[in-house]
Length: 292
Image 1 (cartoon, rainbow, N blue to C red):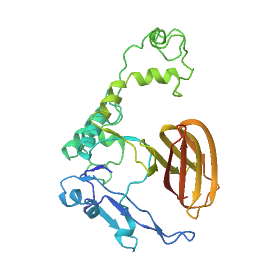
Image 2 (cartoon, one colour):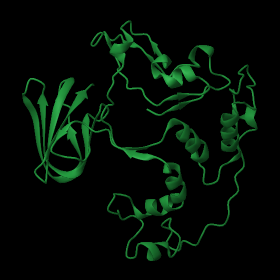
Image 3 (cartoon, rainbow, N blue to C red):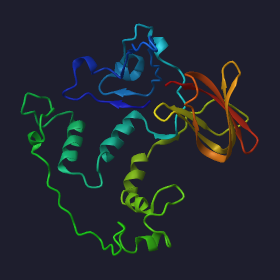
Image 4 (tube, rainbow, N blue to C red):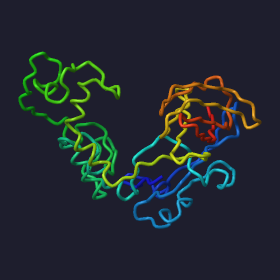
């Protein structure tokens, strides 16, 4: 959703109009199987055909009809701040990298992306902006530092900052969000960048169908951790997971949380119905695919 694609000088002609290539899973355990994608709002630079109809940017290698590879409803995911593709492109170029103080490499890359050009070629045959060694671009840059602020107890935080901003706290203590105050200090150095990169975006929850509740519920399965992540606007007191034949396979009682994780290692692959009970007596439900 809302990605900006811009082919570079080294992009092959066969992929300059490609948003995604869908292949078949040829493993013996699952064959034939392929991914299913929700595509909308994506922009392909200087390509109105793909921009106006994202289906035209799909390379389908599955052997199945394209309609079987695409879905019309977005999957439930964690909330994100989302921009239009054009605005996302601007925000990335403005804030990507170590942008508090960009070095010569970051400045060059941003300039090349903006202009669609390249500056260097490789010393061993690479071309169109691809290099073979760091010496092809002038080697490692030299960094200079200013004098560090006084830090008498060597906790990584300048003297007086904790006293002024979080009296009574120490660098290694955790705040209510789970960050150490050293992390809070470090994050404060780039707070203006963090806020600016989200400017103009919409905080977006992909919601699932629900009954009697007007907030938002987000569900996502993480294969790597075998966890179901849930985020809600209203405190949750109970979660039940059902197979589509009505069998309840998991039940969790929770203590009024708005974000939680539920182990799914024992669940088979497939589509599940997840029913949530809120602390206010209302309920919500949504479907989630467990795909390991």
